[in-house]
Length: 370
Image (cartoon, rainbow, N blue to C red; front, side, top):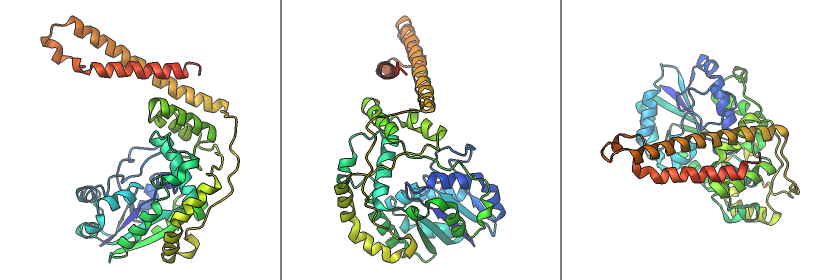
């Protein structure tokens, strides 16, 4: 029989950095008998690339879990490792507690080790809010109303409570809980301890920071951009975070009254949860006096260069698409009705051409001065 390792996040607890470390040291782990499963990140070799690990759909459904185990069968005596913060979410959504032990045993895993990172609630809420701005085009939620939006990170405490309750019922599962707020400077040590391997095998490590938070200036720009064209982190935030990972952002916190409201909503649940968490990794009250935020927004020369390159390439790409669309429309006008169905762009996609024009116009107007 064998061991199945599941590093399940949750979000905003250094998962991108840990996954880069696992990915870069897959050969060293294999020598220790631990196989980093083949998944979505198998062809990525850039150490600072932001990914979702190798198992984003592992528990999306019962069929997905079985499919992944089937594709990653291992030899006798080896262990298999999956890592993704999506495991945390999908495990709960798909009621994986009803099937995952049975399927794991079917593929020879009689020992399942789960690593869950938690994070103190105020900094988790802020970090999740910043991530929503980067990844989901958020612009309506602000620091002043963060307490009115539990889905912006801080309700994850309740999900942790539910997950622990579920896993306690499992006969083959051992759960390790670590508080990212207390060990962010030694993440790989905690992972090595969980895997029961020498930390020295992780000799190749990525840059110090992956998927960093945005500076206040970057975040303000991204929020304004989201208002105009929607989700757009791919062309602004991602290049900045991947190409300039070592920029240290400001420590952003909501007003004290907002922090107090969040903590008050969670304190009773946290008190009960802490009874089940190792003492040095328990949740702590992280309500703090916020530092004043910069009144003037600033960008370094290198930040401007990265943004100009990304937005410039996006504009050039949209222009090329528009030119191709215009040629297609022109050809459609010249062609008889019968052959039109053979063309690459059917006539009923004219609304798509109009949208390309509109997007290009907005972006060009917004960034023509860069």
